Amino acid sequence: MLAKIKDRNVRVVYASIFLLGIAYGVPIALSSLVLAKQGFSKQDIGTLAAFFAGGIVALSLPMGAIIQRFSARRTLIVALLGYAVAVGSFPYIRSYPQFAALRVVDGMCSVGIWVACETILLSRADRTHKAYIVSLYAIAMGLGYVIGPVMAHTIAHFADMKYAFVVAGVLSVLSAFVVVSQLEQDTDLHAHVPAELDPAESSLDYRTMAHVPQPAPRSMDLLARIRTSCFATFAYGYFQSSVVLFLPLYLIESKHIPESRTILVPAFFAAGMLVLSNLTARVGDARGHLLLMRALGAVGTVMVLGFIWIDSFWGMCAAVFVAGSTLASISPVSLALQGVVVAQRDYTRANAIYNAFYAAGMLLGPIISGALFTRYGGVSMLGHLALLWAAFVVFATIYRMDDPVARTQRVSTV
Image 1 (cartoon, helix red, strand yellow):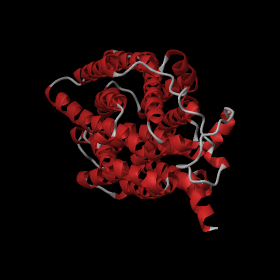
Image 2 (cartoon, rainbow, N blue to C red; image 1 turned 135 degrees about the horizontal axis):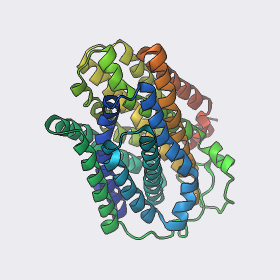
Image 3 (spheres, rainbow, N blue to C red; image 1 turned 30 degrees about the vertical axis):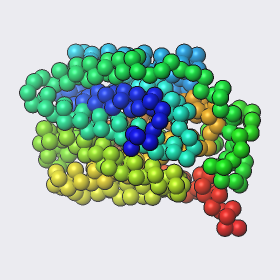
Image 4 (cartoon, rainbow, N blue to C red; image 1 turned 180 degrees about the vertical axis):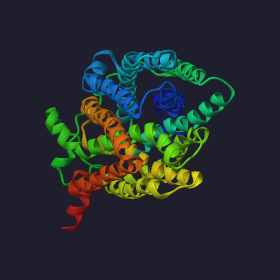
């Protein structure tokens, strides 16, 4: 797969994000357990995750301007080092305010990493292979998410859990070293590429449209173009942050699955994404991103409901695997859709808006899910997550013409 990618800088981003994926996967498997052992309630755990999302929200919209001012490369390096400090410090603090402050820093560093990487990748990918390029980015991170929980399980088995967080910090430092030593200095990514004709203004196939200069769109106009991608990333952020925190606790309390086995559950979600995301990317590039997103969302909704009725550990792992192969695969496809409806010069602004919606989902998800779990139980918590994905499918159906491929097909049938 990598042989098709001629730009070595894209491969450098993949290597960096792979190491970061492991650094993310280790604490994801352990953070709720560590907090629970320290006496924090489900509501406390949920609100601490909301502070993480708050850090993302605080820096999402300004991040576009920050990258334009300091470059994507420098932003990425600083953010990776900042995350290393945050994750490595996690097991050594005790009070709620300290955890809250650390999670804000974690979120601010994370959004810097994401927007910088996405800007580099979308700027260097041609229009007909954006989902393919982004899917490999998601696969690189997903591999890390698979390895991370397994590494966390191994470390927790032989040593104190706190050492797993230190290992995650070291991996993030290594990721920064890869960027420093291998990623080329930023060039003006927009100077050599004329502003593209807005696909919404043309009935032509977006693959053959002429490059015509256009004025920069207002933020609300830009949001209107990427609204389906924004809903998708909001739903994914909401779902991911809720499930990571509360599914292990749900499995322990409602399914009576041992704690040591629940640590491995996030790996199955990531593995599902790894199996299907590249295939879905190819289908999305060829047949239309939004149509594929609707189909994946519908299947994923059913799988989330399946969490309620499946009792065995391996049955639950299978359901989580399918949920990952569908819902997690929506994320790179939604980013690729954004890449074909937005002019290249507007990528940093669009990515900032996109990540703000992701952060909003991460902010609201743990708070609402934690409250539902505490008051009504895990079934209600899972049911409302399924309802969210069903709402996305309806929304994406209503605005199905936001995809240039759908408009092209409609014109060809008239």
